Length: 167
Image (cartoon, rainbow, N blue to C red):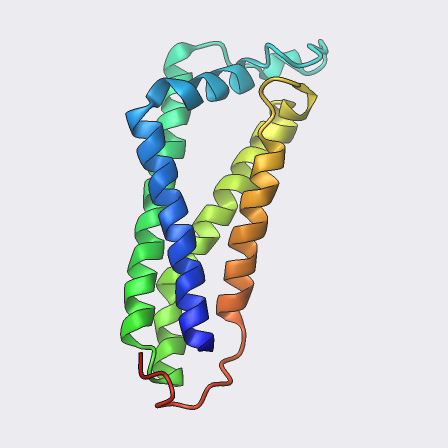
């Protein structure tokens, strides 16, 4: 049951990133506006000491958004591949341990997107925390908690004897 729980948590993260990426591609404008406003820093306190960081070029806004979408697609793909590898290895502790690498890479990629991308770069570099309109930090924290829990759970010791996972 422990291995099945780990597989399912990775699958939840994989599905999350699949839906987020699909939403960003099919409804490009909604979250593009978020990225654009964060990069322009137009709803921050506009401190002269920080405003030199603002990015005004529309081409760079689109490039940043496509980088985010690409990272989401990569994360989803790694997580789905990890689910597949873990499922195939579920009956053996040793095989399951070896199969975790892809899922760990996917979860780490997702954690980096929201930790580095949204909290560090968006939140601190572009002062997103100052915006009452375009502040994604609360959502990023929820995503980080979910991804982080799945990552910690997946990396834990395997206490199930081989052969008990007959699913």
